[in-house]
Image (cartoon, rainbow, N blue to C red; front, side, top):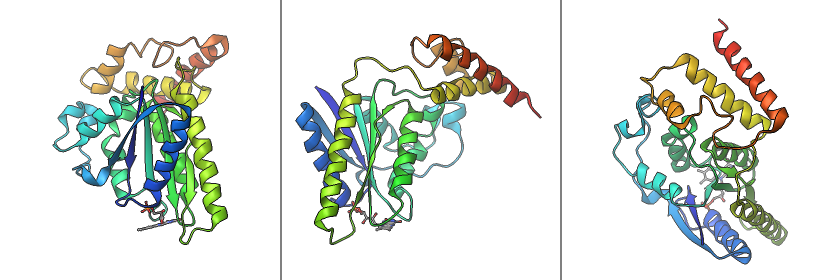
Length: 256
Ligand SMILES: Cc1cc2nc3c(=O)[nH]c(=O)nc-3n(C[C@H](O)[C@H](O)[C@H](O)COP(=O)(O)O)c2cc1C
């Protein structure tokens, strides 16, 4: 059975939580799924100190000793992840942003290949669409397969038509998520993802050395030589574009 873990940036069991519960109901119509709800408010997560030890030396050198690895472990033990947050001042809530900051090292060394991600954002009036895009891009940078997230309108009292629209969005989002969750193979990357990988590795190879964790990680994983992060048949066009991106990366980092 697939396991899905929801990370909630809301301090309340109200609109965001209720939206995710409804999403769970729709998802369970497609398949039997184990769900876990993780309220970030219940975990101890200090603010990043900005030392970059996680980037340069490795995440185990982070001076903050708190629940970061408990939360990371929950992601690693899941097949699917949902980041759910209310809009606060046109952004994700502070606990959600803090989680993203503390896991920023995963952008350097993506690890969630083959796992599925989506976002559920609740807003009063405005700002949710940009946040869905933001969270979905975070999921991609972590290495997840991303099923586009959705925004719920929750201004109270919520008119019936708005409630019905929220339900339709959740139902469709659950179907998208289910499709990705049940994939049996990891898809070929888009040109954009391929470009990001090839430019990142050129950067790491030309700017860093084995003293840096990123460099050693790329070496250990064989990423300096591979076509992409994971074994995949790129096809003739993407192979050519891959070489062009390598060249582009070299030019970018050698330009004064
Ligand atoms: C501090 C704060 C800031 C908020 N900022 C926004 C905002 O910028 N845009 C918006 O549409 N709603 C905003 N809201 C409304 C919430 O996003 C909305 O009510 C949400 O559904 C609350 O989720 P919850 O019931 O899970 O707490 C804000 C609410 C709070 C408490």
